[in-house]
Image (cartoon, rainbow, N blue to C red; front, top):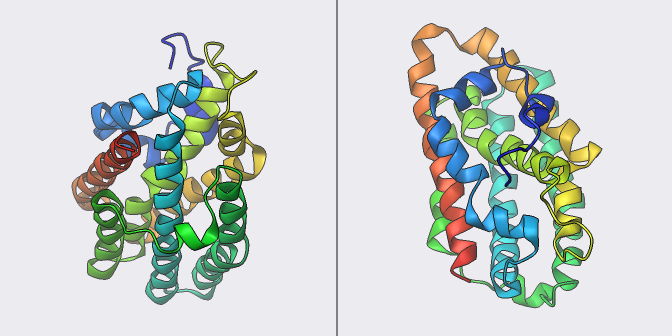
Length: 235
């Protein structure tokens, strides 16, 4: 990404006073390595080899399966009907909508459903998804959401940065639809809802004494997300 990218891109997703912003600031070096990764930069200029993108797409399908499990765990970990309903709605959206859309998107890149459903999980896919679930099992709903935030909010930040960066090549870029999907209003709203969920949970489950632990979780999840990009480049 260009150095002159609009500074307001991240702030459009999360306000400076949010828990998300404070967690990101506590591990900013890792965050910049994740959101400014070579995989992301090559999406921006269209130079990413298609084989790398197809590998990423296939593993992202497997990732969605575990993301659904994480939201199932969120239902169990919730202490209010409102939180249970929110988690259940996210779970059903993944199972009933996002999985189908992802299969259709993969087909456009020459990846059939029979192929992606029989893929072997990459180590990097296992590492991040199991880390998220372990954090949710060992901790509470706030721990689970903090582990998920680099994925959910990070993609919104990346999409918005790329879309608004004048150095990004959109015309003729084979990855334009990916950029516009994560920069689009629907996904940006989903990310803002996740930022709000972190703040809401922090009010009832947080406190100054928890911040260091949450920051370690966020930072490790961020590193695992960067490793997921590494896996894509290895494609």
